[in-house]
Image 1 (tube, each protein chain N blue to C red):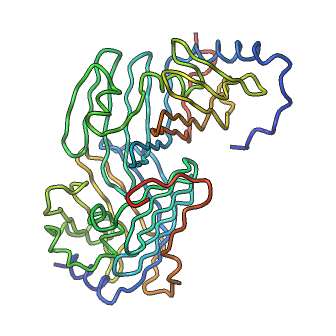
Image 2: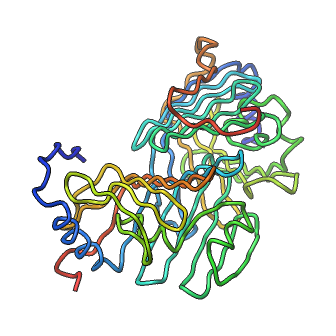
Image 3: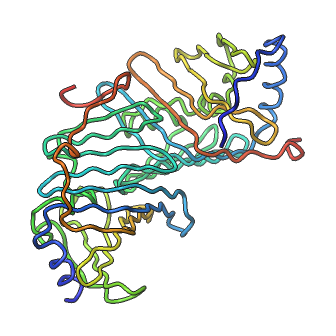
Length: 187
Length: 187
């Protein structure tokens, strides 16, 4: 279908990606809980960095081996092996190289709001969300919406997207800052 | 919000504390949006927190980052219900025991309701005041709590960072915005 074609043309040959995003957390009744902004960097396979810049600072990095989560105000870093927890986070979805239809049932939702929409439902039972909706333009992914089991939606809207920009490998390393608690496997 | 300029110490912190405490104790309906971090035996989580308190009834919504699920905790002094986006439901008469049993989180919900405002919970406690006569540190129920970054709002001064620890457990809150009753309505 049209959605899947757009997605495939977006993902094929995608080595790196940089995008500025606005994230909106929406309650099942449609009320907005929180809005935040940041930048996402992706290097396939398996590396990404999400920097939340406003209204607070948070950093998420998958460095190829481990997944780091750092909230600057809470002064806490948690770290996990990348393999077991990450299969289905949105950024991992983009940076992973497994064919999507292996892990997801894919459904065409047709055109509205000027995009072609796809819905992905995880095949495995233990996914942390119920479905992901993708808003696609001919060669571009414009938005991702994760819907969880309580109907809460985390929407990532990419207002700028750069395909295959040059990104220094160091952008996907993470060094816990001084004086911050680091908690997790192997630490 | 502009950080409070360092104010000169008050002449009598104990008297200033009595005034702060009386004002805070009139606040029986409030709401906050912020973030919660938890550490407990080698694991760590952080999440977005939305908390509504009406007298002794409360509704909390805790949302994991990156669309990885959420949970709702709703209760009153003798009854509490937990719903998670994975479809789990559980009820209890004690929120702390429920969160610990279901998620392994050591969160003293009944006390946090007071600590988050910059008040000791009912019962014995040792406290330390800051130069403005506000709560700086507290020892209560085996927890030691630090209160930081007070903010002036609706005729009250409330903390925006509250870090509590007991043994190797840590529960930290950063409050993005408060919803407090206006002083006139605080009767």
